[in-house]
Length: 428
Ligand SMILES: *Cc1c(COP(=O)(O)O)cnc(C)c1O
Image 1 (tube, rainbow, N blue to C red):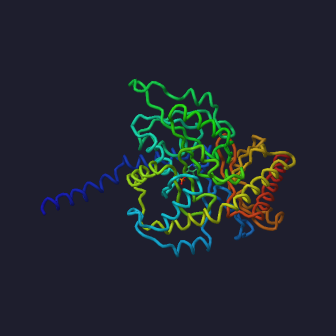
Image 2 (cartoon, protein in one colour):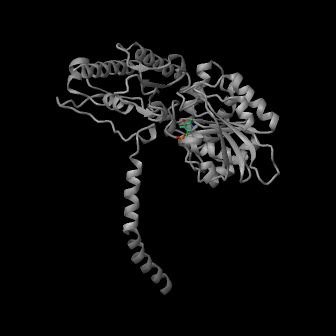
């Protein structure tokens, strides 16, 4: 009892001192400064959408093209969630989760599937299962999500070493370079052991590019020759399937495992499905629990995922069409202001650049997001179009179920307005 009181008072006394120490305040300030880096990519864009409303505008129309993760569940999906039958999924007793996993496994042509909280956890689990020993190595694209945007989780949490191959603009790799990255030294203690090749489809940073099927076939043949596994970060593989007009299983026959996000263009609020062989999934289940991803009455979320797979795939083609329409409108801009390869716009992600270096991607995004005084007179209403500056001095815009044909037309009008204001400005 005495001892307990001692600990308590010690904790109160010194705990509060530690929290308020100058060192931690200094560290917080440093973090703030570090966070304010140049806006080279969409995860560190500091610009919040702002509305200048000199005329007292209150109701600007918002066209949010920042990401396909901003989608919100509609009434039908919410109803499916509300009515979901649930149980304790860690005990394997949630019927809706089990249903989702079965539907996903069938759709992807895999033996089994596992519902996981996020795409990042799903990829990490895949890496942990494929690369069983510390010091195993995976080969990843240098611009892949796994390599760039997942905080090096494979190294810090799984003890897995990565080596990179150059990502081509279409998301593929050079197969000779890929083969050259495979290690042959095992069990010589100098070398890590190659275990896994990761591919990304569609390719996020490269602007939603769809990996050609012959490329996947060749990657798989290479992996088979050297006894490696192939994991696909298929966050948007359903967009790829729709673009190629094939069932996803046609794509995934070339991979051992796949991770598919339900919470992007497919519109679920949360969730990813990881799929592979029965043996792989039984190991993945253990990893998921160790990473804190075991969820209980997860059927509420799985119901949304089921709804996504059953009802939301067909409409992805609209997103692809709208992205293309916007790309063509950029090309059409007179005088020309944008650089875009319309043939590279294969799915719902558009990347483009500005010809004129006097307007930066950051400034263009800011102008698109602000509603100016003249705009209402010119367009009849205020339109805020949200997009992010992206890697390589480009701008990224992503279409999704929250963006209609009309929204796309509004975004085009706004883009033309911003361009005309810009040219007016440099003539003066
Ligand atoms: C979004 C995304 C992920 C990660 O998904 P989260 O659910 O955000 O963790 C992985 N890979 C790609 C290509 C993505 O676009």
